Amino acid sequence: ILAGVHTARPSSMRDHLRRAARTAGDGLAGADGRTHGAGNVLLLMLLFPALASSGKSFFSNSEDADVLELTPEKLQNIVLNDARVWIVDFYADWCGVCLRYAPTFRAIAAKLSSESRIRFAAMNCAQHNEFCRKAQVQVFPTVRAFHLPGVNDSDTARGGDLDRKEYNSFARFPAWLLNQTLPSVQRVRNSTIVEQQAGASQAGTGARDGALAPHITLTDKADRTPARSLVDAQLALAVSLRQGAFLHATKNSSDENSLVLVGEPLAELCAWLDFIAEVMPALGVRTDIQAFADLAHAARRSGGGLSWRQWDEALAQQGIGGLPPEAGNHPALYWRACTTYTCGLWTLFHVATLAVAEIASLLVEAPENSTASSRSSTSPAGALQRVRGFVENFFGCGECVDHFLKMFDGCMFGRCELAPEDGQGIVVWLWRVHNNVTARVALENNESPPEPWPSSAACPGCWQSDGVEVDRAVYKHLLASYWRPEWAERWPGEQSISDDRGDAIVFALVFAGLLTVMCCAWEATVGLWSGTSRASSTARRDPGRGSVKRPEQVELTRVGGAARETGPLAAREVSL
Image 1 (cartoon, rainbow, N blue to C red):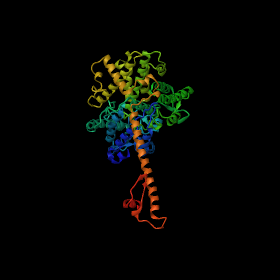
Image 2 (cartoon, helix red, strand yellow):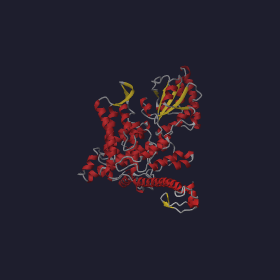
Image 3 (spheres, one colour):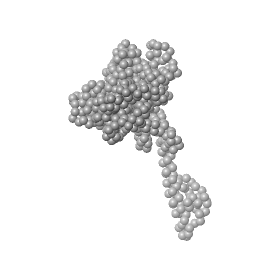
Image 4 (cartoon, rainbow, N blue to C red):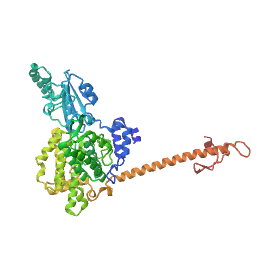
């Protein structure tokens, strides 16, 4: 790794290290379902701490002079202590809708840059998760105003929420802001002028209402294997527990600086963790998740709710499936086939629904299969309900949530026609939704329609017609990407679940070989030093006559364990 870093160009250093980290981490999913090789990743994080954070702040470039990228300290010292109006975009760098909105927000800030009364800023909640959680930022993006007349809570440390329909419009939002900050006698006249100016200049800004970020989807990567998909699913779960579980928390009545999860969100967290603890195809992973589920259930039974302090302490002490606890906050180095949180969530949903479908299939084929019957009490239809509950309560992209719930509750793609025990049906339904999301995002971004996933080359049968055969072809393709049959047949801890263990073994053997060579070289060096020292002592003094021999007469029988000839060359080596 270090040799590669030495030769890599600075511009490609980050990519080179990421590839090295993936190579060093091959074989992460071990026979027990836990993540091995994490020490290599942790070593990279210690050597190169900048890689621990995603570093995808949207407004930190020189072109963003009109938008201040905030930290919690800057918000306190600059925004809250300033008498001017501040408009702050709270976003998450993994959120496609946030990336979509960033050009609009940037253009609005540039448009009003000459207005000394108004300033614009942004905070990446993926990097400042705890602060945003305490500020009760529940969806991304959230745009809030500080010190803006007529907006509730804008004079508080929390800030006042602004209407999405207003701040999402390049044409309307600048006019509305100026209208709010000007004296009432000037508002109507100025509003008309600003709207006309905004409409005339919009074409040159690159911003447009509803402009969407490049779509994020899964692809048929050559390195996507069930084992790697499983690691990505575990990692997405870890990130969601850290960054999503408390999106709908409320302030603790006994401690205003602490949050507590109560009511329906807490009940949904318990149900979600119970479900995942049943179906994840790794004994170690299920045990780890069940520990979090037990904590949530205990808090619910207590009646006082689950406090963030309890949850944070639990997450800091225990990872999932061998992933270290810090992976939930800094996942960038741990992805295997995915590179983003949203891709990891889709992977988690596909793995979970496939698990339910495969277990249900085993029970149909062999009702007496006690192992399968003990694995899941969730029906296929119930599995989709759990996915819906997760999206509604623990996913921070507000627009994404609205679209998903519309498809789910509207029975799109025949969801309401599926039989409760139709495992293949729920897997294929989720696949259709996934493709629909990808196509919709591309359309809203004025991009050409993406090739459906999987590609026709990867799965010819998936697109030949529409019917039972297509569903079977899709299901078979998803199984090859996300599942292994033995995961449902027996506890994965009883046998290997990783396609990458061979790579890990080869890596270990090569490392052991290099270590052996180094040890032998060291031993030979020590032996050479010892032998030459003894020979030099013997050669310099003749016990019989007390005289020093000439170098040419020195006889060395063995140096460093190897026979050597006598003569001038050997003598010169002794002298050296």
